[in-house]
Length: 313
Ligand code: AMP
Ligand code: FES
Ligand code: ZN
Ligand code: ZN
Image: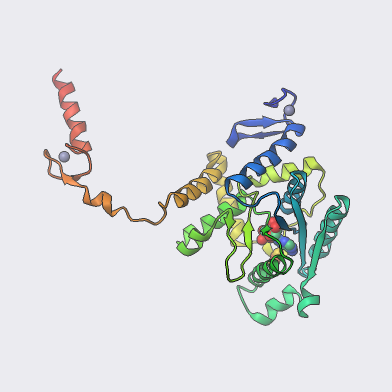
């Protein structure tokens, strides 16, 4: 497989885009596309201050890298959650986030939940009895709260997270399976700030596949934490991602189409709208008498009529 831009050996082949690129051109293509999405969804402008929520994983570190390369004013925020049983997940992800910031001369704010509130996430989960025994619900709640607090208190114009297409498609899939229409309607690449104190939230990577972000991080030489949070094992999100991956294998592009068609339907106001107008326009077919929206004969009668003319020829 050859790079479409220069003809050298390709490093990555993206079946869903019918596009293969060498390392150099791939590392240009990702920021170009990101810039396109930032503009398309009107996420933020060059003179605005962005706070990137960095977890030490490939997506958020790559996002920070891309925004810095594009010349945006982007500082980082790392939330120390205190999840250190077993693999030292929080310590290691903080170390890698700090290392990235230092090497690229970027500013990283660190907020330690335990220092701030006296308890870490696993301890808060035990105390609060929220969720299914995992600390994930408490963790999500604390992350949303703290990200918004810091973005607002420090005067950032927008808060950016590293959610990729696989994340977004899995959330949409889960919400659709359960018909959580309010959540579905709220899912978006950009949520505007609200007058009551919610900061603007943006997801510049929401149209990139997870494997595209992994490739970017590796080809850029970004050191990131490979392990998922130890509490993520067996979660619903992982099940939905696996299901969508099966679909993607059978139909390349399925994940992207699922997400983009959703955004399109939402934008054109076609989501959850009953088409009563259409129903009213039905009339009865002059040949069979059944209701139809076709101008004259219903589609079935037209087919039979055609068949009749052919058999008499
Ligand atoms: P997750 O919910 O773990 O899939 O993470 C989604 C996004 O939330 C990441 O891409 C980051 O932008 C952000 N994030 C997750 N964990 C942290 C953290 N400990 N500190 C700051 N941001 C985080
Ligand atoms: Fe929060 Fe796993 S429980 S990252
Ligand atoms: Zn090339
Ligand atoms: Zn008919």
